[in-house]
Amino acid sequence: MAEASTKDIRDLLAPYVKTSLPAAAALFLGDIAIHYGALAGAVLLEHWALKLLCAIVAGAAISQMFVIGHDAVHGAYTGGKTLNNLIGRIALREGLVTKDQL
Image 1 (cartoon, one colour):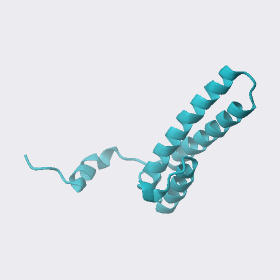
Image 2 (image 1 turned 90 degrees about the vertical axis):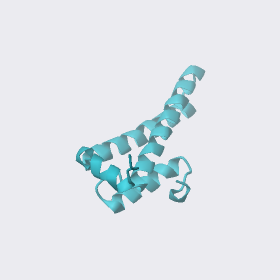
Image 3 (image 1 turned 30 degrees about the vertical axis):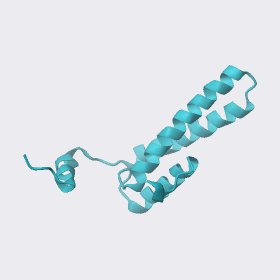
């Protein structure tokens, strides 16, 4: 059996790929809100258990932000190249990762 090229795989998956700007924006902005809300909770709350919970949530949010940024800089998040690059740079900035490091 011959190996499939990247183009063959993309052509095979094309019917299942659909980008949605409203969904992408909601996920991106929601994740930013969760991340900064959890960071604020980790700093401002008094009880150690709440601080720990907020730190865990912030860690999960930054992990999701990396996934969003990675997908965006590879052009798989929204339909527009410029918007993908902007979202990717903002999302990856949170984790101190540059586009060149991917």
